[in-house]
Length: 310
Image 1: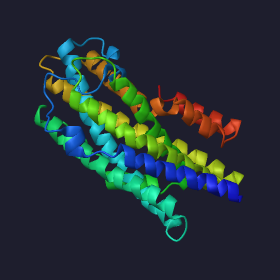
Image 2: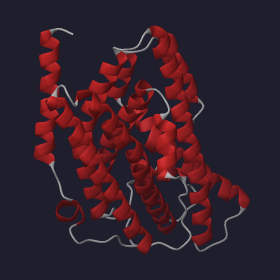
Image 3: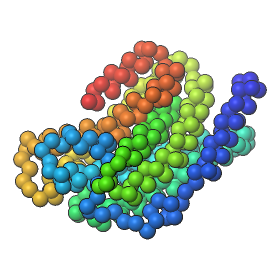
Image 4: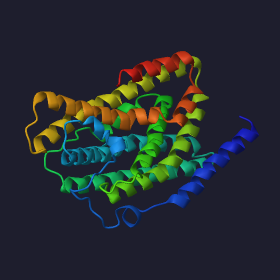
């Protein structure tokens, strides 16, 4: 790396620090502000819930779907941010006796991820207070983090970049004018996006740095591991779609026969695959970064794997 390249990287890490300082927010003062969720509100916007896919449901039932998906949204982010924080702490050791600006940037990243975990824990509990008993989310965050972190750093960072980028798409969906959408959840989207947009820059910088250490064979293995990670995410989504469909059926207030139950579960799964996989994969910047690192054949492998998740 040339001195010019080193200076440019140093500057980009510094910019994320300055941005982090500008957008800093407090959970109570800036997000929750003494508010609670209400049973008459949607929690997630229609563009994320893919609510038109729930073809047989009444307006009130569709609102219940948005509430179930909102609670799952909080749980999923609490889940993935556990492994992301662990990875950032691991990467920060690279700079402990080196570039202190890069170290500060990653440590701020870590601190903000801990705050996000607390935010999602708190809103999940608040949503639970206005929803019927019986909701289940049975994935252990620590077990998942250990499984993800067993993969190569390249694969983990590529998955993380996908996640950080799709928060931008989710925020854009939340700003649509919809009087039924919870103002509290709209602020969750806003403030989460403010910090995750900086995290995406750091993910990219660290991914490019890691990519520079790999030979062709190691990168090819890392591509396979990324595909394995996406498949593992999809396994979680399939299980949760089934659990959430059962919860809906148990509490929607009417009889749901098998064919409709199957359609409801499929609609939950389609929404979750959009929220947690495709909305990131289809983000233009994710495609630009990834295609700049891999071969056409590797890209085709990834696309073939994604094509099975539709």
